[in-house]
Length: 352
Image (cartoon, rainbow, N blue to C red):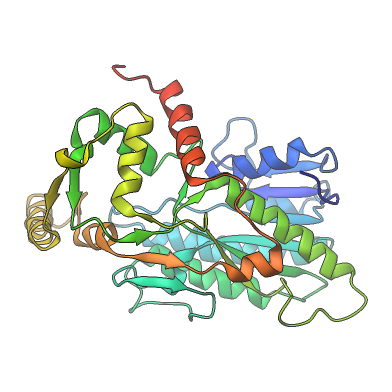
């Protein structure tokens, strides 16, 4: 893969799951030789966002991939606000201070248009952002606020911005769903299914999302150098793009595919189906028990929001990304699943 030089490049959150894949993609291309990474979760680079304003860091392109993980624990609202909202505001202040950045690509979430409770079928970027109180996840609320902040800076001081909305990422280095799904398969829990299993979900191999970020950066630099206005139906700056593998799967088929890749195939006749309604009421009991025994200080690890998430349909139409970014998935679902599990199992062998 080749693309015009983006250097100097700064990847914020470059040691995270998506950020690491993005940095690797940039490193593999010789035209992107000047790459800096900012991430507080690395022992070798301990920089804060405010350090961007220092004279030695003058990125032409910035990828802002940093964000706290989506967690079910209580008392995380402040963290989401500080990183997703205040951190993004600070970043833009630093960009204005150095005055050299031409392109800013922000990693958002496909869930910013969704209340995370109802079905979403072939949704496009035309659906309005969803905020509290309709938005049931505060994390997602702050990502939507950050989108507004990023897009409000578009075309300010010669800066062009765009949004890449990641959708249910999986891949090498995934520390969220993959460890749990492989663990469930090893423990024999891969047979468990909530609901009838027909709910479709859009997943995205993380390397494909990284690729979309690079395409967006390339487009922004091209638009920045354009001498004529870019047609509204073709422009990338000031726009949001949802990215998927363009291959929705039944949610529970995906979970079992992860288990099968780890060596724990579940036959169709061995699947244990539990009614979504029955499981929902069982979870209510767990939530109340966690609240009572912790005197209101803790939430149940399993909650009603999770049950809704596991049984809903959530798919997207990525025609906009195809047309304007030229995006096509580079790695298929099946290949991505195998890569993901091989990476995890090599580092977490069974029985250890």
